[in-house]
Amino acid sequence: MERTLIIFKPDAIEQGRAGTILARFEAAHLRIAGAKVLRLQEEILREHYSHLADRPFFGDIVAYMSSTPVLLVVLEGENAIARVREMVGPTDSATAPKGTIRGDFGESKRRNMVHASEDKTAAAAEIARFFSLSELF
Image 1 (cartoon, one colour):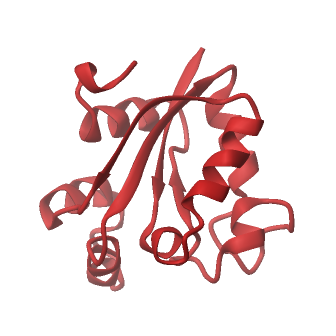
Image 2 (tube, rainbow, N blue to C red):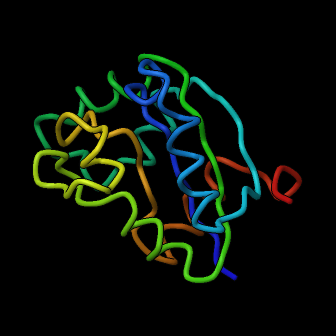
């Protein structure tokens, strides 16, 4: 059993797509182990996106991700990380195939509906960043 983090980005919230997207994950037999709505602050976004800190667009990412509350969800299931990554599709919505979340709903590299943990190490760190043990079931 594996766990992964999904962040429903501001575009998913603004467009009312979070429920539709979450239903896809549940239909794929991924179980919700934790969920909450937060307005992410700059400090936690700087930590979460630290691998992009030297990029010229870093400030835009922080501004975008803090522009509205987001939905954070921990999903669990067999091979959850790989399955979620496959369902989500490539980062750039323009190249994401139809049938993937980003291909069906995304607009660009940034406005692509969701963030999904890329591997086991990232998933563990990201889940711990946003959830305490008592918030997971």
